[in-house]
Length: 148
Image (tube, rainbow, N blue to C red; front, top):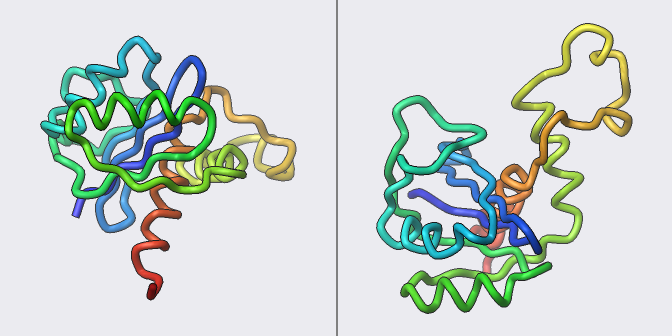
């Protein structure tokens, strides 16, 4: 089952798709791309979007469940998703930026002298909004497995 996590922001938003805990696709979109993103979520076609992380060969897949972070600009995104018939579950996104930094270093282990720096002093060389979306997705997965 493909799941999607979305980290909304004021100027950009991160998106991550995963299946069985494995990251398939992640990217950072500008808010101007919001209509295109909601159509991609509805139709499952991702080949037109640049990706920060993409499993080789992945270009399409419709998420069965979308997890939307409840922070900055989530109301705007929620409205756009509803307009295009895309369902979502709201997830608490507090602390996901710090989780995203950890995920970045798991995907890209530090080399050279960076290896000796503590994780708290390492800053990824790029924005990690897409990995914050993956952290939101992981929280959503946990929520799915908890009994009600």
